[in-house]
Length: 83
Image (cartoon, rainbow, N blue to C red):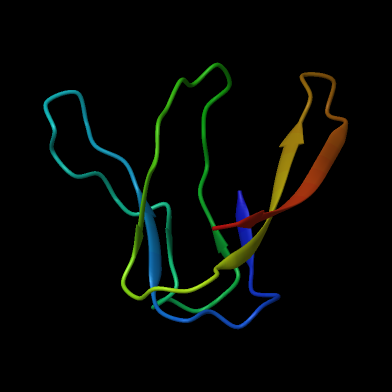
């Protein structure tokens, strides 16, 4: 997954996950870090994400997800999320 900054944000935003016992895992996305950012997932992964925002306001983030099929065919999709 690659995050693309296409809108101004009212504050910082992070996306993170927790391990099986609640331990923090490396951040998936962090507006304090330079763009683009990417985060790899293995095929068949079931995961949940936590989203944090440090200021009130409207956040619009555009993400592009890319994958390669078993046959080596690349594909991608882009979506904008508004919070």
